[in-house]
Image 1 (cartoon, rainbow, N blue to C red):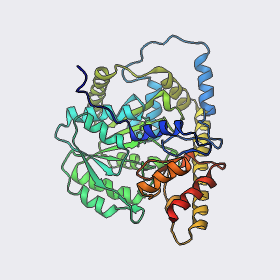
Image 2: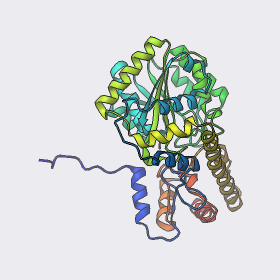
Image 3: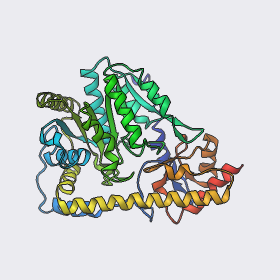
Image 4: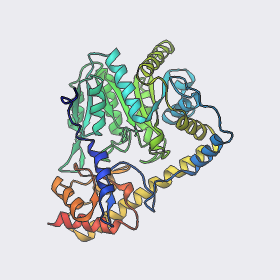
Length: 398
Ligand code: PMP
């Protein structure tokens, strides 16, 4: 009966994690999956989260179903983080926000909504992008195309080509954008470049869908949301998916949000209703535990401040690792330019290694990164960085 079912080859990034776990090399280093590990190579529980957990645990409360859209405090937390605490559009009730099952859930609900209500729209993603972007939109029967983004030869952005491409798109086509810490390249647009992109979006009446999974890991909470807030300032309709997986270190709790900025209150209510309907038919309502943590941390002023400090400490540690990696590689291979390492933002570095070099790192040194050469810099620490830099220098030299 089931013999015709295709085998699943597995997810390339999650599969790498399994391979890493099975590796007996005592020096092995996991730079594959996008997870922040601290200086001791440990997945941190943030102090603000510990406090929230204590509050949740005392007293242990009943666990009713949450509303389809999740906890109001979770939704408000998403909104204020993305659009700014005092944003006029929030006062005016022009944002439909639901709490979602991680950033992935937000993308899925958004993709379903676009399929249902903008059936002609194609969705364009950056070349390259996080692989699941394509899978999620195609899984909702939205046709996916790619726009030029990364220039491998120069470790830069093909900005002019990208703009020229956007100029060819049709009204209501969706462009998926990464407001900060682009995954997988780490190469972000400048604010002036965002302005140019959004002017094209406006002129051609495209639908911007901004996916922000690393807010706070680039420059700071507000600068990382520049593109989102600029789009709002320009009066554009806008989808935003956000994830708390990384910046609250709550990967397994699956917490995120989907926000849609609308022109009028009536439209906001319609959109909010349809987002609820979409949730109802997929998974009915989001999980409560992570939602309660988000609610507490985002809405308690002192905890929020503590949280921001903890995110910046993670950001700064990653930046420190970038500097160190760059300096060791420069010393080892003086004729090669490694500036790209510190020009990139967020958790990832696109190293430009060939698939063969990535494979050699894995088999000869037990160093795991994605075959497209994406390295998770947050997996580096003072104990493993020399080992990794020397191994990289070795495979680059041969
Ligand atoms: N968007 C991007 C760009 C991501 O990198 C990720 C996580 N790797 C997600 C969305 C999904 O986030 P989550 O893990 O919260 O589902």
